[in-house]
Length: 147
Image 1 (tube, rainbow, N blue to C red):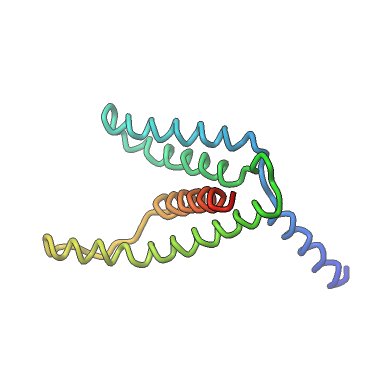
Image 2 (cartoon, rainbow, N blue to C red; image 1 turned 60 degrees about the horizontal axis):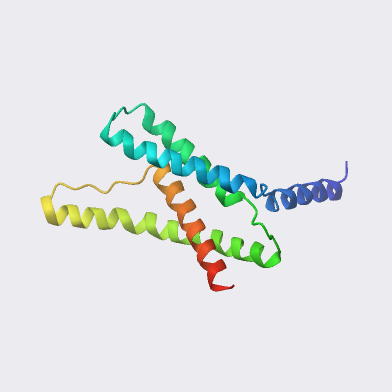
């Protein structure tokens, strides 16, 4: 097996992964899942605050948001692909900045209020949820601004 053919196969595989998208119908499915789970999460606070359900709901909510994020638009062209790429890039940068700054803000505010505050990080859910929400918001805003 030649080195060149291995590189070509790897490049082909990466290009397929880069172009991966779900059909448009998955956007509706993802929206239904995300809204449904969000409603259950709110209801769980008032009805039954069982802790074992929380990580399951978090995971399902992330799957719903990911379905929305990976779904094609009804009219998918190179311009939409460019907007999607920009929104992922902006979301990634915003989440990195948020993840670095927010614990410091929490620490300073907590220190000023009760002086027993420690610097704490985020859970995976907070980071992934924020990243998906920011990506979707940037994508919708970029699409709206460029109509």
